[in-house]
Amino acid sequence: MADKPSRGLVLYGDGLAPFLADKHTHLHSFASRAFCGFLSLPNSPPSENEDARVIREFAQLVDACDSNQNACGEEGASEKVDQRMPVISERFMGMKCAIITNNSALRTFGVKLGLKAFELSEFIDVGHPISDTAAGKLLNLLGFEEGKVSVTSSFDLVFVHIGGDNNNTGEKYTENVNGLVGSLVKNIDEPDSEIGLRLHLSILMSYGTVVDADDSFSVLKSNDSDLSRLLQPSQSYTMRGRNLRSNVRHHYPILIGQWQNAVTRKDGAKGFCFKQFKDNGGMLTIPADRFIHEVAFKLWKTPKYGA
Image 1 (cartoon, helix red, strand yellow):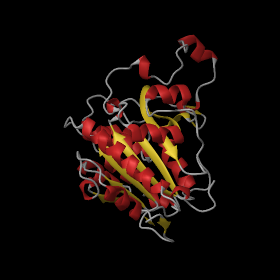
Image 2 (cartoon, rainbow, N blue to C red):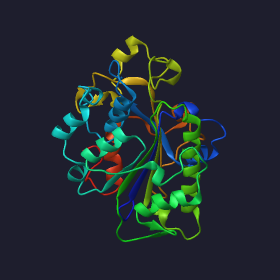
Image 3 (cartoon, rainbow, N blue to C red):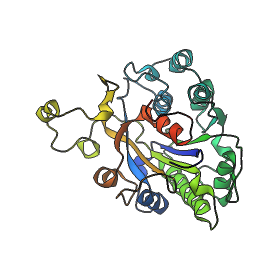
Image 4 (tube, rainbow, N blue to C red):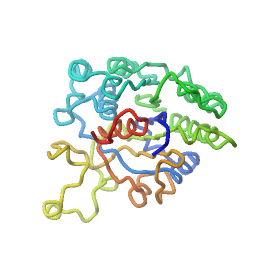
């Protein structure tokens, strides 16, 4: 644990995991120094459109819907969550959060949860090579500038959402994420930089719309038969408290890597891909709705992870 509260940056490649390739060297390098694993999601409701999926899966990441009822996959989901759930700053000790995205539905949803919403195009030129200034703009929101850490910052946690549309631009978006990771790590690795000890960086890459199960992308062990699953204890990601989750998608989880100098663990993963994370990742699988709690703990905005 750091001796001072961290500030969090989450790069969320929505639907971009299928486009990961060997050429994305910055992402693979990041995975080699990060703590890697999976975030499990519930199954998609029938006839879910793209905006509803984007909102539902982001709501999972910030624990803003009841996954047992699939509330965030239904029409009018944002209103249901708004009525039931206090804003994030009320839930996490005044934590100031922002969402940066080009998805207008997600911006509206984020505002209802108390996040400050920005257009992605204000920070990066979507579909074009990442400039050195892009990472600087994001770091400035968190109070980092020229390797130094200011006493105060505009935000404690910033989500950068890239993807989540049907415009067949996945490859370009993945290049954006890869370039942004390279630029951020460059800032962190600068001599005398103070950023690495205070920045908790999470990289998430999801599979987007999923229709069919595929055992090649399942977090279950290959020898998990129906009988063995009855005889062995339930894995923790299938539980919520003492209750078994009724709707868990075991395949196509969100890939997650987290890194902060001298704070996060390092595992054996050498690349940002499903196989590396399953074979060599140390985080294993956790429910997506626990993600915000873990990050808030690193930011000193909740007294105990998982509470």
